[in-house]
Length: 190
Image (spheres, rainbow, N blue to C red):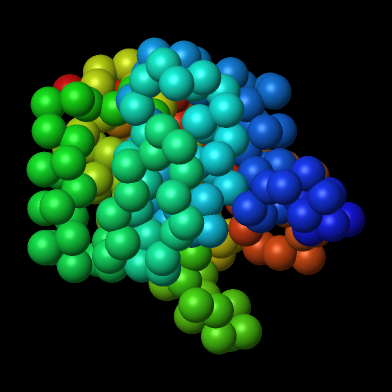
């Protein structure tokens, strides 16, 4: 249903509806802010963020896969797990620290739940390490995770750095999917 709706509306992916739902409930995006979108391709979240920011603010996107250009989005193609790509991203951001880091990065899944969850959590931890480096005090972090044994320890880690942590499962997420989104708000760079 969401794939068809996305295609009909000219959106890049159904993932856009996930962010749209969280925007409706949590008001993550505001014109004038700087946003980093990790795991951006094919660009649904960046496309939606650009629409909300209305040309006021900055969106920096990164993915290992290519992504067609989006007006108002700066894009780096590269592997987020490689130091050289991370350095390129940090250089592009410069002193313009983001108010929101969002990560929809997912591993290539194997169908083996524990392996997929471990890979997902590794990527989520890398995204959090990045957010810890770049977020402004008071900033927010939105990350996709797969439920599993490392879920609660990761939530506890978030609670150590952010004022609140909320679990989200947007309607556009497949019900059978183990994916959840964690929204960590009010970063304290402590």
